[in-house]
Image 1 (cartoon, rainbow, N blue to C red):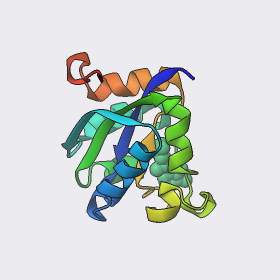
Image 2: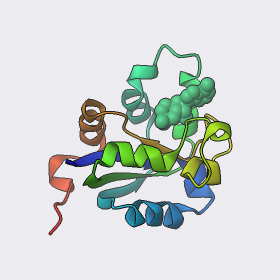
Image 3: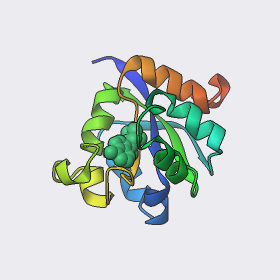
Image 4: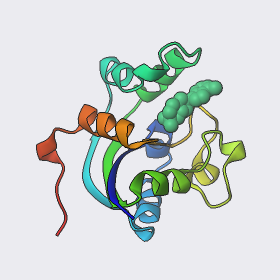
Length: 142
Ligand code: CMP
């Protein structure tokens, strides 16, 4: 399995529910390492650029409003198959469809307020990591 990096966001609902710790523990217990992290209240420019691929969707305005409503925790996770592993741990976008034990099943309340984001492919991971973290801010392990 290739070592990969992926962008993870603990969204405003996850930060407000005070579940940063258990979410990071789940990542760490499953072989993912936090190699960069920053807590920040996103600007509209940051959120709109990050989600630009969704800008024609009917929920885009709602998504940007939510993501800029309170601080988020931005992280780069590293590990074997990190992109797929992170998405398995997050569960389906809609918490009603998420498997038992996944982060969204445990903590999310709706499709919009779904607690975590994770990159869905190597190309998006590269874009998303670069959008929030200059190269120099991502550490290497060991
Ligand atoms: P995320 O993985 O961050 O990527 C895009 C986000 O759009 C997604 O999680 C959801 O939070 C949000 N989203 C997707 N579908 C809907 C929807 N029907 N209504 C509101 N938000 C949505």
